[in-house]
Length: 190
Image 1 (cartoon, rainbow, N blue to C red):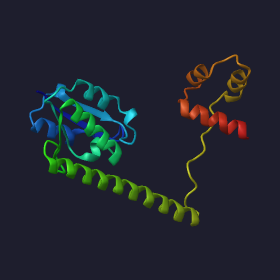
Image 2: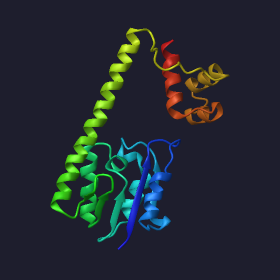
Image 3: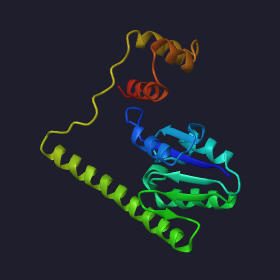
């Protein structure tokens, strides 16, 4: 039986030390502490979580600092906990004091998961309201348009003629895939 600790922050800039200290306080070996710097919004974009779950065996335990570090909506939370249950893994959330080995713990997990999702929905709602007010007052103009890199025209026409692949153009111009496609669509529209 192994005990694991899952640490997650939403971006690469955020610090994981607070959560790592809690793992150390529980005496969890560093090899069983999995750290992910990724949004919790999409389960498929969390390779560290997927890797960790694949290592679980019957009787293992997973500890997280809080439900929000593990899942950002009720559906994902319940799906993840079901995967853990299927493997015979106990789930513990420190902040909410939830232990899924008890019926009360399972019930509380569902309640806290719903509350976490509600809070996330409220945050998005307040953000949208704030943007709408700022737009009315002329203070919000959205994101700054992306500037075309030097030599864009040259490579764009080569790309359209089929003499250069999109991947090569992105590499030459040092563009990420999403930025490249935004620029292509923006260029076509102008």
